[in-house]
Picture 1 (tube, one colour):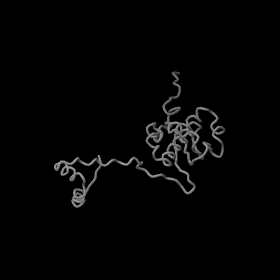
Picture 2 (picture 1 turned 60 degrees about the vertical axis):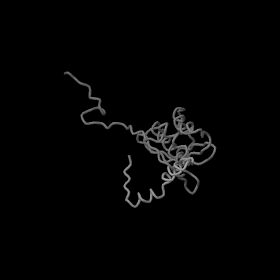
Picture 3 (picture 1 turned 120 degrees about the horizontal axis):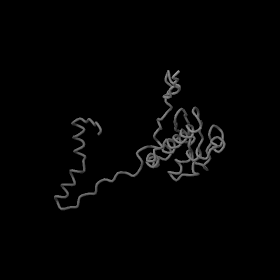
Picture 4 (picture 1 turned 90 degrees about the vertical axis):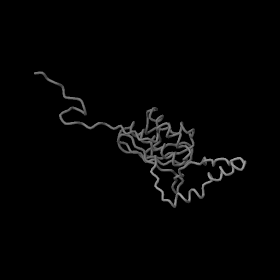
Length: 179
């Protein structure tokens, strides 16, 4: 529920310009009421691209942070100056990175350049996926609903629990010795 506060002059201008008052008058005269205005099918958000024609986004997962630039191209993905097959050697990590393109049916249509820091390879792949999804929705705002429905725009907030004092790890105790 939104909290829209309006003054009386705002309400008066709304009622004076409202076509809803004309429709009952037309119906009373025997004419067919006018069709309700149709909401535009254009996306509510604007396309956000830089001077080089790229969309930028930041992706995060665990301790990894990825800066991602997306532009139309042949589908080449470059991570820290290296090809994705070299940087992410495991096929599952490459599958994770390409998920946003598969959901939006844009496989091989965009080039991705990203730099990633922190965390391990799994967290970095998740950060790149998050960044690609964000950048895709900025380049093509119509794709936002498809990417959001899959949950790719939501940052996965799960991180490693910190170690506590008097314990071996976060929850693991030292081995108990009876004697």
